[in-house]
View (cartoon, chains in turn green, red):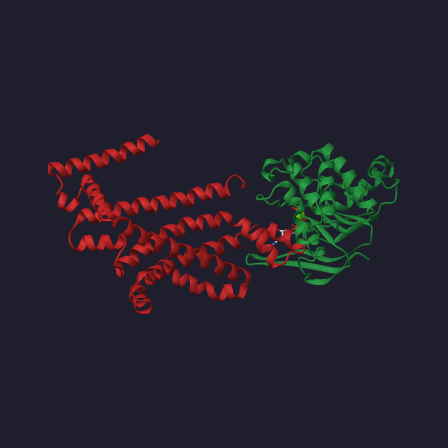
Length: 242
Length: 246
Ligand SMILES: Nc1ncnc2c1ncn2[C@@H]1O[C@H](COP(=O)(O)OP(=O)(O)OP(=O)(O)O)[C@@H](O)[C@H]1O
Ligand SMILES: [Mg+2]
């Protein structure tokens, strides 16, 4: 078992007051599973990922984290402007002391695949929003984490790039048997990519619907082409109240 | 732009000279550009000019370097240890509010009347601002970047070296600029209180024996040196911080 939330609640305490972001959340992401969270803006999705990453302790309940490395792609790219694209990508390798030639070459291969080859020596300020997001994604993948926490990783990409990067990320995650927890506001993306889709209520986030996606051959393309796609889309829309 | 600035300077100097020569100003009290130039030439010929400049420059640069290094180090320690930070912050604020010149007599008693006392005065005047500036720079580091570092499993040492120090480079350069100005205040003030040499000494001595040419000459040299040192720091800032920032 890779990741499990058991009755998790989280409240932010600030001088301005208290914000209950998550309430009584229970779900599970098994090893090698791809799970998506969809929910309205501000409902507490990023908070759930921070809890999953172990960056904040739950106010109530339990977050069970199995072994292995976690890779967390934050909602903002958080690239360091004083480092080149290449140095940004290598950052997790330096920190995790896995800065070997093999790891670096693997990361550079990803950068090349995502069209960043000619930008490796540039600084993040010289990149477009979509390119910056790809750099952040590669930085997350660079240390070859076992579990990926992805917070709207494709939001800054144009539609075509988005479809392509989605397919690629899905392929990487599946071929390397990684576990993934994805936050997105795009219902069709969630259905196309995931083994399970979890719909969340407005703040404080709680589960309002949970669906295993079993149709298609597992690839995002076959999912989108399937007749069951539209039905699940409508079900999720109903649960999200949109 | 530069031409206009230069023209204003030349015009003012010209008027000053003119008024002093025609007797509108009493040159005994106001001196004049030509008399200042002559005084500087005399000092240079007597071989004392560079001695006095050297003394003041040494005190200032040494005090500046010690203040910046100590200030940076203390700020790092306070950043590393949050409880120490909350304990010491009020002390720092109060020390910052204290006019350090009030400590002059104490410093003389503790340190004697040599260069050490003046360097100490210089350090004392600049170090608190260095601590406060750097700490503010450290604390202002983007929260999401901190979150990112923590999510990668970075400890305090890695967060410090890979994020906080590079991210606060602009704050550091700004600290250098502020500290340069304060260091000059510290060294000259120190020389006013205790000294046998230096530009501050020349100014005080010139005032006591009513040689306004000497006062003006020393002040002019001080202006050039302080301006030059500031320009040096500003240039370093442009080279270091440069375009690698948003
Ligand atoms: N550090 C914080 N301190 C105080 N309140 C916070 C903090 N972070 C988030 N919140 C609040 O908690 C709630 C949930 O925030 P969160 O970022 O988890 O939502 P989200 O679902 O990711 O939103 P979005 O869709 O806009 O990304 C919001 O009301 C937000 O204002
Ligand atoms: Mg969010």
